[in-house]
Image 1: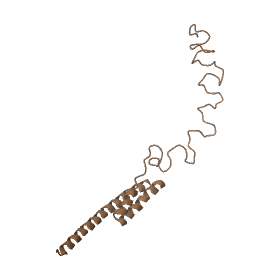
Image 2: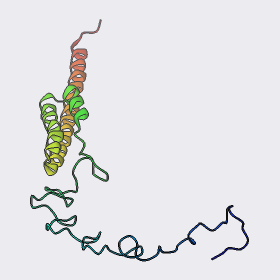
Image 3: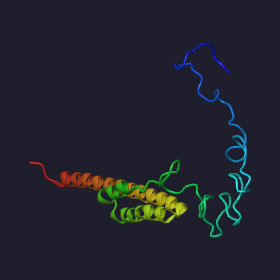
Image 4: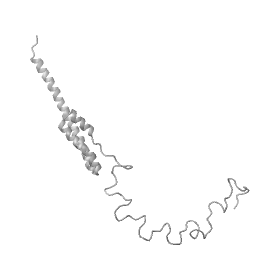
Amino acid sequence: MSYGNQGDGGYGAQPPGGGYGQQPPSGGGYGGGYGQQPPSGGGYGQQPPSGGGYGQQPPSGGGYGQPPGGGYGQPGGYGQQPPPDNHLVAAILTTLFCCLPLGIVSIVKSSQVNSKWQMGDYQGAAEASEEAKTWWKRSLIAGAIWWGLVIIGYILLFVVIAANTPSY
């Protein structure tokens, strides 16, 4: 096969031994051209005689299948959801400025969120997050009512004192 008068070399020269894409002469290698299986019976597509192989799962339950305990919703990895918000900042602020007893309950619930998430209790972590949010909101409402009553009490106190003070 020739590509015309191209000389002994150059960019378009024919490689020695034939053109591109040709099969090697039969009889060499594994008994023929490319793509043929070796005659020994142990080719690339065959399973080893031991009974094992790449497509079988080990009897211990391991392998590449879905991990035990689910697979969706686990922390870390690509496409996994993050843990729920623990509302710790709001719990601390409402404890300090609003209502101490309800704020403490909120802090306890918010501290349970991350520990439950790390143990794999995803439903429990979500519930603890919702309870923490509920308790800090209760603390905020109770604090707002408390401070409203304090302000009203001071106003009434000043009114009573002003009414009972004799004017000169």
